[in-house]
Amino acid sequence: MTLLDKDGVRLTVDDEIATVTLAGPAKRNAQSPAMWRALAEAGSLVPGDVRIVVLRGEGKSFSAGLDRQAFTPEGFDGEPSFLDMARGPDSELDATIAEYQEAFTWWRRNDVVSIAAVQGHAIGAGFQLALACDLRVCADDAQFAMRETSLGLVPDLTGTHPLVALVGYARALEICATGRFVHADEAERIGLANLVVPAADLDGAVADLAGALVAAPRDAVIETKALLMGAASRTYEEQRAAERAAQARRLRDLAGLGE
Image (tube, rainbow, N blue to C red; front, top):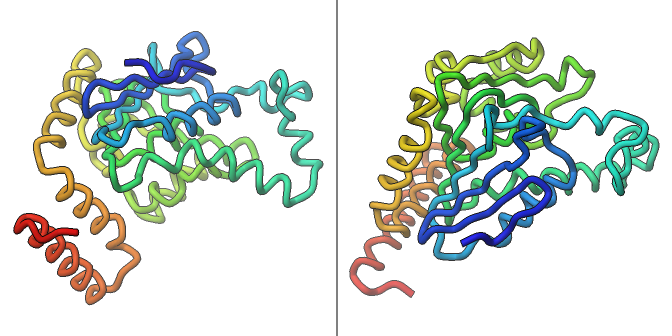
């Protein structure tokens, strides 16, 4: 069932699994403000009974990043150019960037597990979109690069937090400041990729992972995800307490005593 198909974004749902497809292969799924709004809309349209959201890109690349048209004086039709945005008040610029970030924030909500299926290039905004997901399964031709710094910018689409969490501060700084490519084998070695498979096997590997994830009871997965996502911000004792509270909820639910 197709719930959304516009501005280079397609959302389909099959039982407990939703698939968000970047559908602009002619431009290597280059991103634009319109695409970001569509991605945010897709998040709001995912049905409540969906447990897994797969993010994929059509064609040879996952996403080549921001469409360079954004940096031209004309920008995109019907959109303020980035140059015009820079000339506006700080409050408006901050609000605009916050709106763009909404496309990248919903993938880690507790009620779903999101999987990025990455092939070919995942550059800049494409890299950050892959980082927005909980898990990344990569084809052996995947190449990540954070090119914002080389353009005189910073990664601002929520990618810095998960990147540091995955690979550590020093490696994250080196990857971002140099803008170099991280190939699939290195991505797996340093923790960016959960799994690397031959390109022909990418869809099958994602389907297998999704199937394994839906095998466990939903509420147990939700509670476990919340525990793990909050672990870094809690002390050891706080995490112990959070584990106890979560387990108490699970035990009461299994005993038929839940609210």
